[in-house]
Length: 311
Image 1 (cartoon, rainbow, N blue to C red):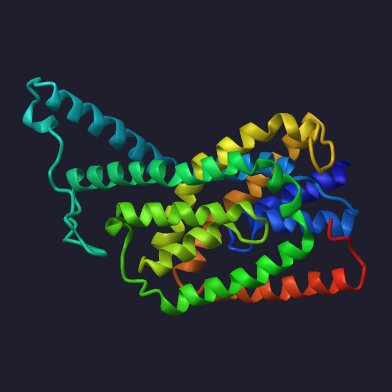
Image 2: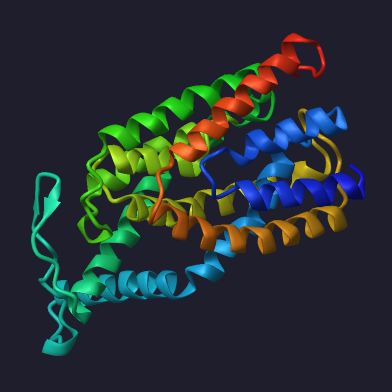
């Protein structure tokens, strides 16, 4: 890998990771069209550490509050179960909204209710991460090779644009993040598994699932960001050795190139997070769906004309 490739691919990763357009597809396409090669799934996974670091910084207060609420509530419930005397002020709150079907009862905006909500979100992220962890490990070799075929990538770009459009059309978009349920977390976690195929988009899959479940657009996107943290971080760390010496397809990158590409992805990704949250508060995800269709058709045209190779 050259320095130009590392810088450009880091920029592409930062620009596209959080948009529902598939960063892995864009890295694969840019590598093929401009460099005549494939950066590799491992390089993609490692540079995603930069964009996930951007999420950690942007949502630092939210993440710290969720982690603190999860451990605090677990500790309090263990103490209560062991028969220890727990001061009233430290007892687990009972103000968890009662779930009825898809909806939650009235959410009180106070410290106890916020702690209970954060505690639940912590569990939802844990539960939702299990499917992609298992599937990603079992099919890691296929993900690094055959799944990166550009015919498949371009098809998934178009096909999932239709899924996003359906989610926007049929989703009620009435439930705020306070009304997340265990079912929501599990369904969005299963949808995240689709992102193992380049062209799907992690944020596109999870956000669309959230919209189908009736979540508000901003709530679906916000939880999508939190949901990606464990899976992407684990994938990036797991892929570090292979990024230097790819076992399958992919260019060799030096440690310095990986570091610079990851830092570029971090800086650009941080700006992308802020922009996307403002965008989805006002506009539909269909704008990204239209872009996906145009890009998918262009790549299919290049493949049919023999301009680029599918593998």
